[in-house]
Image (cartoon, rainbow over all chains, first blue to last red; front, top):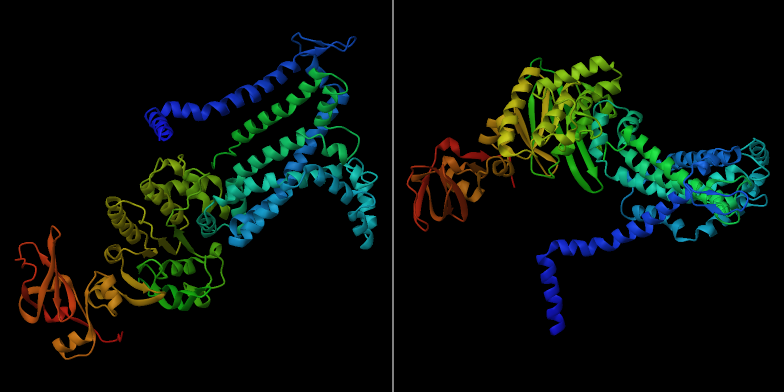
Length: 306
Length: 333
């Protein structure tokens, strides 16, 4: 009885002082974000302005832009360009593949089929990332399913011709950039489908009818109404696919060539090489790129439909 | 009202079934050029589906839809010479008002300068000049409605379809828009087909009305015809909530075996053929509404202000003008 009245008194007090209630609710996440997340980010940023002493291999704790200068050394700059190209290709392909799936789910799927859609999109996310990547290695390998399929269909020559193409080809798909690309595309696709589907879900059917009613053919409606209205979702999805690809260091390690991407560079510089300032400088690049990307998207009016 | 006597829209034996629901069931409809035509009915009566069949958003399960003599049943919406004002307006949120109005001209491939000046003109027509740069989200409901109207009118349609366009407006604005739409229609000479569930709106605005119920047209006629001479008890009750007298009572009064409609405002207290008991009296301001039970039937009576109001429970005699009792002889329950 006494306990109950204590609980009742507490809720009465909180009811009378909504600000205290709000503070109690907001304080833990603010502390988490402020100290653990932003704090770590600033520590990273600070590290990137230090440099490493080439003779002793020790970190010199003085402000310098020398480390950022190192990013532009040919071998490092290649890593940046390669990563950005891969992230862009994966993002564009993901948007193209995701759009029809998301459109179908938003516009036509109801009841059971909607459940099947969500299950189909989410199911891959339930299994371990590593398991998926290694499965793809098996699919793409020289002795893998894909090769077998091409052989069975007597189409090996197509695959061989493709693998002969420089840069994107290689000895087999599993050690080519195409392989890395396919695995990235597969692994990040749900992160594109879901926001695009959510954006399309909010477009009322009457909007599409109005466009047709005013004389727009379906392709014109797609271009002038559906895509602009889905753009916030596509941008949201591309933030995931782009930044996840830029930061990943496991997929390019398992599937693909020996040339490194940003994630691998960060991993090696902060680990074996012990060059934490350069690792930090590499890690800052994706943050800057995303910042620039979002600013440009906002300027272009991508969020006008929000 | 037809200027040249051509048919703007013709529906022949049109049905639209959704699974086992007959949303539109064997509708025959001819709408003349230049007519202000209302599709009136309660929700779910098939009037909106009928409009969507004319716009091309729905395909009939059976029957044909002709627009200006041309069979349009298989023609997609974007090739029909009709434009629609949607119930929710369906303005494009990512475009400003001017681009919304110019949309139809843009997809048609008209040059930017000419389409924008045409859009300005259309905005002028609906008294929204100067609003072009705003986004739809910055407009009030009434203004959005006008933009939707301008966006349809700028296409110079042969037929304008309006799907409950005034439903979301408040009473005052709705009355203002009713008269504005009427004036606009007269001025432009375009055929207007107007869907509404509000019988007052249908009666006051339209040249002719089609009354829908359960996917079927109950009656087509001028507002006066539909009001004064309803064909079926449904029309009598839905349009102006009339008293529907059953055949037993009607045969006592007239010797004819049919349903009859008797308007509440036509009945007066005084020496007449029917005797009843006052069940309830409600003061409405300009009038008083009585419920009188006579011969198992409860009649609504609207007494004008100034007439003596009998007490509840009193026995009264009722009389009316012989013309006021309208027999529905084509209807057999």
